[in-house]
Length: 189
Image (cartoon, rainbow, N blue to C red; front, side, top):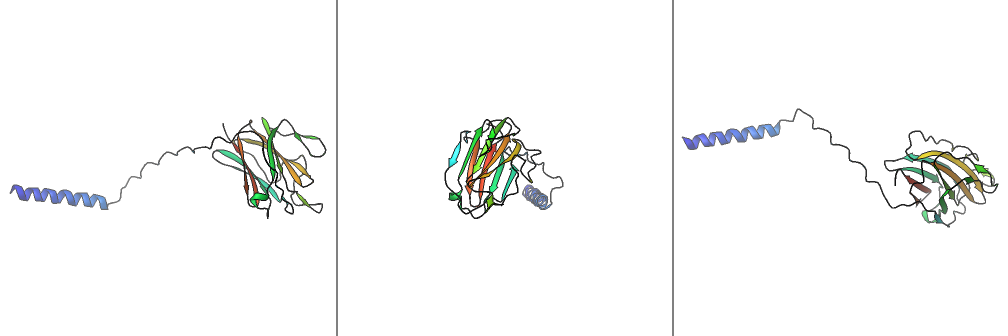
């Protein structure tokens, strides 16, 4: 009798376990806490330059984006391959328009000058709608962590100048992609 009772109890436990496994849980599991993004380090804040030339290609747009670890500035140069996109990106005390020498006011704790070696005009006609000394058209920096201002410096002799007002002198990187020059500025050191 003990043996048959053990078999019955074992059978009951197995049936209960299988039945419980087959019935979906009523309570939803607690949401997993969001893990903070691992932000890149080691970018630095010294000037970065590539003397390549984008001869025959023109700037058509400049735009921004806000990411978990950095704010992004993108200059669109359709048709230019990554190895053709020449640039100089550096922190400056003042954004000085080339060639007039006039200072363009840029808000923020630091100014990052972005010069792309591609014109914003073709045969004298603008290919990018920016106005010298004015905010970049279509760019709204509300809610950004790092960017405070974005101004068009103009285009002269095959290169185009932009000024980014940033919260402080923060590390940045420059990426050359087909058709795009990308500048990422970190939110923190």
